Image (tube, rainbow, N blue to C red; front, top):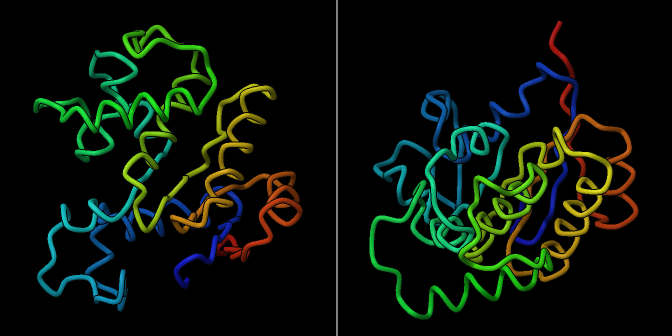
Length: 200
């Protein structure tokens, strides 16, 4: 995948989509057993997981489930700048300005002080996608970002994905197993499609 080459990774459940993304984001031991290059450097040649995370923004169902730290919407967005679950340092004023700009861009009508835990599941997912993109990393990884969403919030997520792809600041990798999202990708994004077969 070249910089700017947005790619949809599709395949049935169990085909290895999430495992592939975990290797890219540094969360899978197979990343060191295979010849894998990320940002022009072979994995396992001395880089730290934190060096990789600094260059990648990610959202997955697992991250959504694991984001149990209490806090405001603003704090969740800010945590994307620090690659942490929760905020454990005093944010710079410019970081707060950036978080509030992203919140306004989402158009959810939420106050920065709104409790993340009290949001609907769909609103939480949108905030977490913005968290993945807030630092404008070279790579944004979206692992089935519409999973578990109702049709309205699913559509909002796809519109957000389209907007991220159109800004040409980050390369987007998105995983799906839905045929309708493949059609969306072809019609609205026009990026590459990687199909993973189910191993027999």
